[in-house]
Length: 196
Image (cartoon, rainbow, N blue to C red; front, side, top):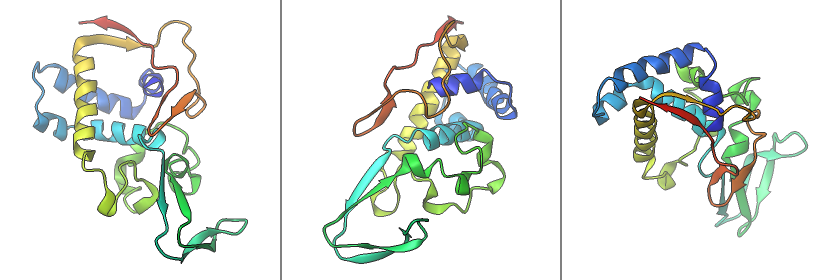
């Protein structure tokens, strides 16, 4: 959340578009699923956060049979790689989401507008915070709606949300993180709010 707050303190086109959604949603005391779903910019905001801080940053699978993956081997990672039956394959959404060859030279930046214009529509398995295929998280829609609702309720309750004076803004990925089954901030997120 700290990275989102530091981003929100900057004046960017995406921030102003999120502000349009904020304006529409804060006027209403009750927020419906239809209103939240209609605010496309809140989805891009969530996708950008999930890309940099996936809830499950590491996943693994055990090979049920010997196979050859088309890439991943050799010094440059472009050669085939042998995976024997019973071997563990670890998949890192955290690392994959920061690949410059997919997300551009600013891959470490929190930039929701990255999702505009269909430029990332063909990335396939390069973005998988909820996994995919037969093991895709059944709670994906619920989780995205829950984070959207929480953000809107915070915006409705607060006229201003800022970082406290003296709070260090660390570059994305440089802050302390805690890795268990899920990824979380090791230091939490300290904020200063002004109630409406």
